[in-house]
Length: 141
Image: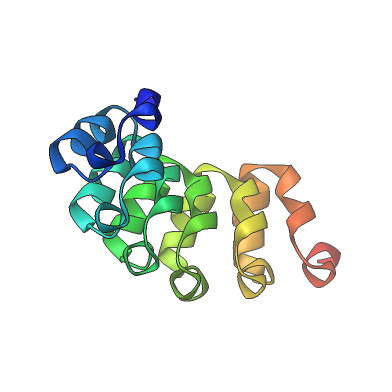
């Protein structure tokens, strides 16, 4: 899939070519896809199912799509770091999904989320190292 970087830019804008790459590994598919394709929900959805981190290269509007964001985080919880800011700031269910699999994903979560005692307990039970990502008020509890 990474060979796509050596293809002509015309192929980077070809639906079939980029869909084929996305089915194998979504990261190079979106990294090299044309702007038009990085804004297409169908390709981003396909890409994040094979590599959640591919959401990093999607346009902001698509990164704000809840369903696509959830697919990305389910595939790779560290994808939470590349979600649209407003989605990361307001959607606790999405953040909890990431937290359930990788408590250390807390480092990319909003400050308010890291100050929540219930969240802290959930994270520390799953992985004691998660404590270092919480504020001093939570740590002292």
